[in-house]
Image 1: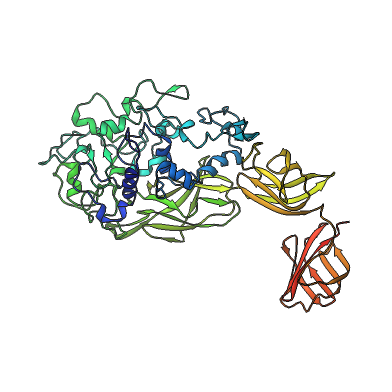
Image 2: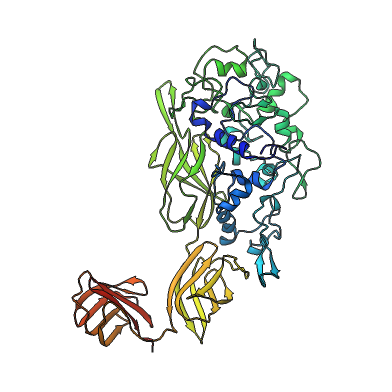
Amino acid sequence: MFGNIKTSVATCKAVLLIMLASFTLSWADTPPPPVNQNLGIPDSVFNNLERRNCWYCHAPQRLTPTDRAELGWTFTPPQVKPGVITDRHHARVANGMVMGENTQAPFGVPGEKYQCLHCHKIVWDEDQMADVVVQNFTNCLNCHKQEAGQASVHHLTEPAQALNCKHCHGARINNPNDGHYIPEGRVPTQVTPRTSGGKGPNGEGACTFCHNEGVEATSGIPVKTNAVNHHSTGIGQEGIMVGGQPSQLNCTLCHDQAGSDWAIRRCENCHGISSIHNIQTDSNGDGNITIGGEEPYWGHVGSSPTDCNGCHGGYLAASTAIPNAGPIVPSLTALSNNSVVAGTAATITVSGEALVNDLQTTSGMKRLASKIVLTDLDGIETELTPEAISPASATVTLPPNLEPGSYYVRAVKGPSESNPISLVIKPAVVIEWAEFWEGNTLTVEGRGFGQYMNAKDSGTRVSVGDTECKVTSWTDKLVIAECPEKCGTLVLETIFGNATDNMYGGCETAAAVSELNPTIDAIDSDYYWDIVTIDGSGFGNGANASVTVNGDTCKVTSWSDNKIVAEECPIRGCDTLIAISDQGSFTQLLDCN
């Protein structure tokens, strides 16, 4: 999976273990180097990926058993950044998002709104004798380009090029040039960390004391040198162009002309004290992260003095009063539901680590708890206070007024924010009215229909009964189709789900009876008051009676052997009434003349 190493089942299983490592002490591999790979993204190379590598972390919504068999996976993969991949892409169409200059849609035009055919391609298939959708969209790298051997796909994105590293990494990194504290101007001392060649008795006091190449024993992950890891993202690689401009990840992000003792200041451009001193995981699985009270080498501030000495060379006295330490950077691993229908006040559980941690202060022990923040693609934030929270999870209720689209979910604890997880608010697919006009022309009005692709198995179609209709017009709120069949269930299939209605415009006017065999003398359908009255005989005593019209429940106000009265019935003409009691049921069509 990493670098030029092909993904195998064994490697996948190894990475699966590392995703769970932060919760179980038995996965520990100490002392470094290489450092434990139990926090964030592994220290390795990601610029020579194949489709299966992408799917390992960003599993598509509909990963079928066939897909897993093709990949050689015998297990359900974990997701580093879980999300409903299909819905996330479709949301760009649903909310009318305009493509930017650096759009990665293969057939897209910057400045235009996203359309289905900006990503999908339709061709004629001689064998099926039909237009079909080319299955080009299952390979992420068709659209999300990497510079093989030079730059990872992640670091060619707009956030990376804008030097917004925290967009993906959270507060485990600082954004360069954002004004965070760097002790520049101070003469390096024995306490100052070095990039390599630490001044401690065993080489402590340098990044490479923990972060160096080798195979991490527990997971089997091949860890590269710091230079290789950074350069393989695309930093300092000449000739890389993004959107027609040279990549912003140039050499000066990491290097200047100062001597080696000053080099750490360039590292602090991204790895500042406010970040470094809040990176820690739970070493013993008790659910709590205690600064200075964890096992060594499970982060930067867990063990005093061991972790302190790793960076500062053994010249610091043991102390838990670590500068800028406190709000340990939270991490998110999953949402209980990544896709919610708009208008729903859904309750979701956010899972992760360090959502809460305790901090000893001059005022006593303080409990630092995260807020959950949703950010839409325009950068507008919605802050949610958890109804329940622990170090490993938080429960929040989503506002029902969230607009359809993609959102980033983060845990924010003061200045420390987590990595994002994707949430999609899907449009509700609602049929508000459907009727046949002028013969077999069906008109469907509603909302959330999205866009239509005129191809076999495109996931967008209209059918009545068992017969597919021919779509002549399709917008987000109106569909017109020619339907050979007029009697049966209308099914409207859209990219965000299906909606159904009952259509009986072409059904024969006759009573369909089952069990009960009543004699019906008269039916009165009162459209104004939504009341149906049926006179006759043989209706039974009406024990546990119910009446529905077109699947909607009416209020039964009277039922005897010779008369049934039901109110609050959504009558519109040629409706299907179903009456049920303990003695049987019968079905009757209303006003289909």
